[in-house]
Length: 303
Image (cartoon, rainbow, N blue to C red; front, side, top):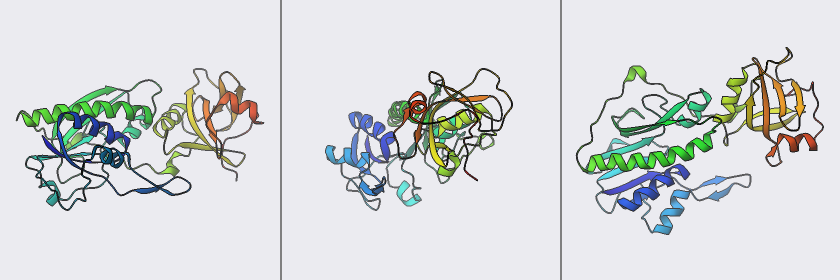
């Protein structure tokens, strides 16, 4: 199958590599290089870097040197116009990392964790006029592992998605693809994550905060404050024991082996891994040894 691949980032790269083994990649469309990090240095997208090594043509969307049969879109981040979608001989397909019609939108992997879901999946759809609402070609359910964060889940879904893409393309190639309309009654949409949404509200339950941290890890990061300094929380666990009534965000216990126990709106939350601004990520044990943190202190913004 002759394919033009549209995509960005490591998630899409997993799919492109698998497709390249079985199909003819006529070219790749990647977003322009962006400035990244504190120094705002130009960073080359992994899709573009891989394509250059493989000598795949890298296109601007206006024209193509050979007539493709399929456009395959993975994490491209931009809506394609009808004129572009009409270019391939067959049609254009998209990999979306959720069980559509649930969790439409730009950050489904993060939101399924934030919402505390136990399962998710990948969906291959024919791209239509409405984003993430095209006809379903193929789906695969995936169980979410205990304690799994967004980065870890994304790696698994990239692998599952790549396999699903190959299956969907095989169905299309053999004219056995059955297009199924999505149920608009069951559809849900979640927006792009904002960095500010990662600030922890300690009045929420320990379970809600635990899920928020999983959904924001590794990026954009869930955070709180200690003595006016921002702390990014990497790993936590809900305390199985009831905690004594106290102020939300108050440190209830400090244990080098267990971590830092914090009061929430319901139950307590053990902090196991954290990162003080300007410092490296560390275990709670390392943090306790290296900093004067005390029971009774609060994790919150300074008033």
